[in-house]
Length: 200
Image 1 (cartoon, helix red, strand yellow):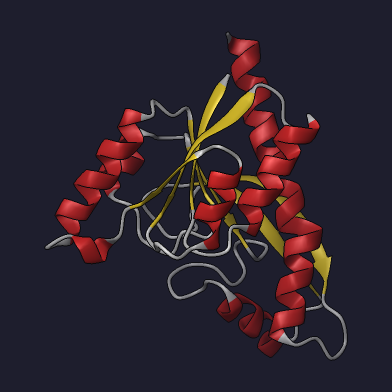
Image 2: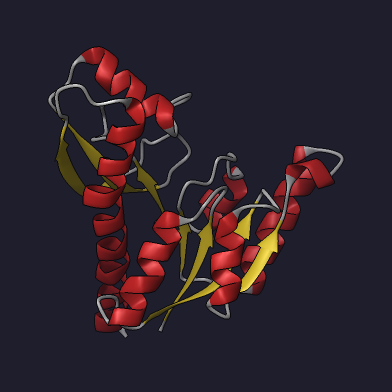
């Protein structure tokens, strides 16, 4: 059984897509063991609790410095003996020590077709604002492994989404979530769980 931890800062719609896929059997042999947020009012924590999953808030604001925060985050992650860490809209830079320790076991969902509109400063609505400003006709989402760079790790899955005439950033964000993010994030976890099972 793939032990999954999800790190999230906001509403947790991607988390919900994953939980639904586990419930429906679309993702087999995987379970979410813990959801961690840097934001105590993140609705994602509520989603986790409703599902009987441990929901923790570890916020940089509660620590004197980033090092203490990073140490606590890594300590908690280690406690759960996770096989896979999913960054589902986690707006805090994760520590390098965690990337090194969990090499090829951390994935991230990004709301564009990498290498377009990614890297430092590209998150949330800013990605969609940039896509519209550039006038692209196709955008989408990417699931990639996390390395030391921002959105630079190996790509696992991508899905394209059409940009429609007159789209607002909010409309485009919603369409990318519904048509791409909520589809490929569960698919990626299902693939990894299947690989792990085949190796076992």
